[in-house]
Length: 195
Image 1: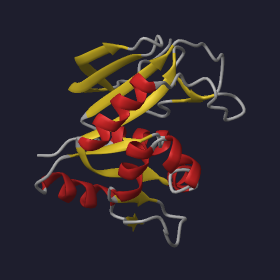
Image 2: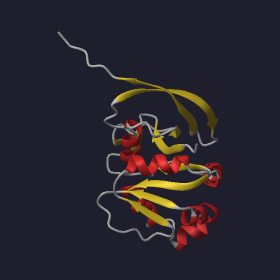
Image 3: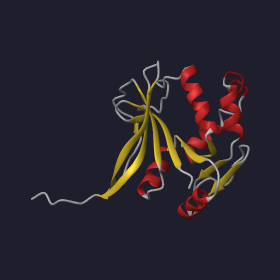
Image 4: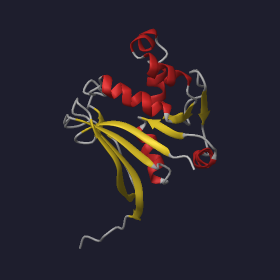
């Protein structure tokens, strides 16, 4: 069965963007671009929530992106993309499918199909939703050597404890650390009385 992988850049204090939605703290260099290219060749499709999809479709097809990051832009523009949104009405980026309902059923069917794994880029709200219904199989977290002090967290409103096992780690020369975790066990949270 294919895995659904969440790939996310985060700060040491767990944020995916700063207080003003800034991303200029991301440490990206040739080594990171090589990792990204390899990751994109290991998957068959990219999954997005609405906001990340709109951000990516406004960047990767541009002349700037194609000239500056040709190998990554080729994969980003040509891989099948699936956007999960109840508010979008159409999608216009090359090879993109819009899913508006029955997300669980669609993803379970997609995971059963033959092929390579599926990756979610960014899309923290979507990742939190899928985490709550136990559909994320692996988290590839790139921890950047920065403390933001606030911003948007990777996860929010998670309903159960997810015990993880580390399956791979890599230290980049920039100070970034890639941590790859898979689900080991899900433990329902219990409410305790505070008497």
